[in-house]
Image 1 (cartoon, rainbow, N blue to C red):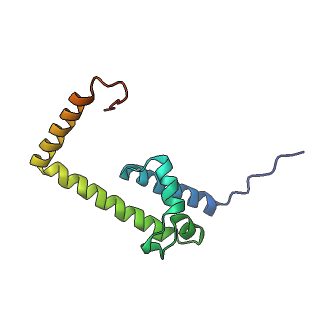
Image 2 (image 1 turned 90 degrees about the vertical axis):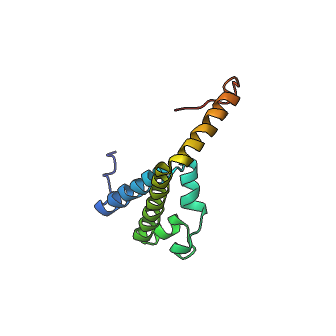
Image 3 (image 1 turned 120 degrees about the horizontal axis):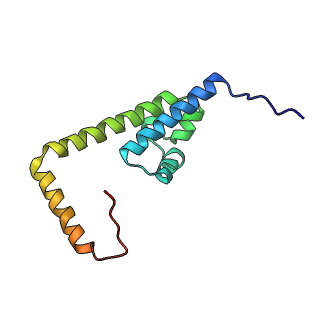
Length: 114
């Protein structure tokens, strides 16, 4: 028996590529893989008419899903940049991190990655 030919159409490949790009942005925003899955499937968004991202995507509204994530990404980057420019706040965050490092450095339960 011959294997079935690949029936993936160019538009399906492009939609998969775009979904992967959205997932990449979600990762850049800070969502872990499991959180990304929850975001796609369990969280309704006002900007998507109350639908989940998956519901909107499957209904052909991928542009709205991308616009939502891209807007969220821009906001996240802007907030990060604002913190980086606030030298006093950045110094305070560094002090707090150093305090946590001192407090938990002897604990075998907590491991900080750089």
